[in-house]
Length: 172
Image 1: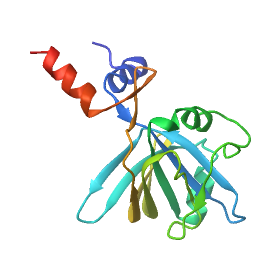
Image 2 (image 1 turned 90 degrees about the vertical axis):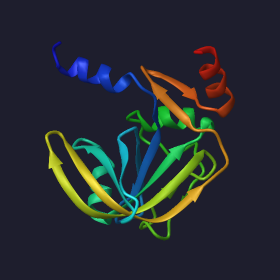
Image 3 (image 1 turned 180 degrees about the vertical axis):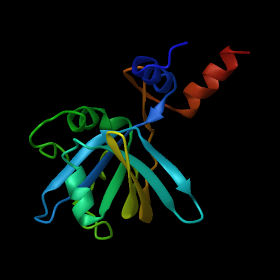
Image 4 (image 1 turned 30 degrees about the horizontal axis):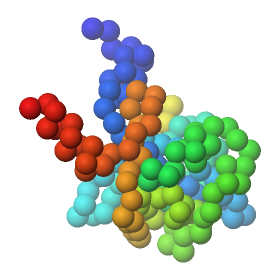
């Protein structure tokens, strides 16, 4: 089978991923952010995570200058914000409530729609093709008792224990 970019997208679209909004502020305190499903744990012992940021992202300069960012993993109530932050909207923060992170150089924390968040300080940046891989130390964490927002094959979904149990039972 051909491993072209369409097949590559199909591969990674074949399973559900959590949705996050990565946020940062520039030197003037202006907030920036983008929707991402390219976030992963690197090391629990060292509290490191990795994000992938496109070179054309308007948030990238804020991350590079502040050397800090927040990863806001979205709860089910974050679907609309996910779509706004995935767009090129001029003011992505117009309809979301946020609080600046003390730990992550003022990066916006989206407490009303977050399932959880990580406040991060950049450790290393690696240029790879048309993206930057950013490895960061997690300096602060918040977790809320909400259902996660997931994304698969261009559609949103919500994972819940009851749904998972029903699907597992029907497969038997």
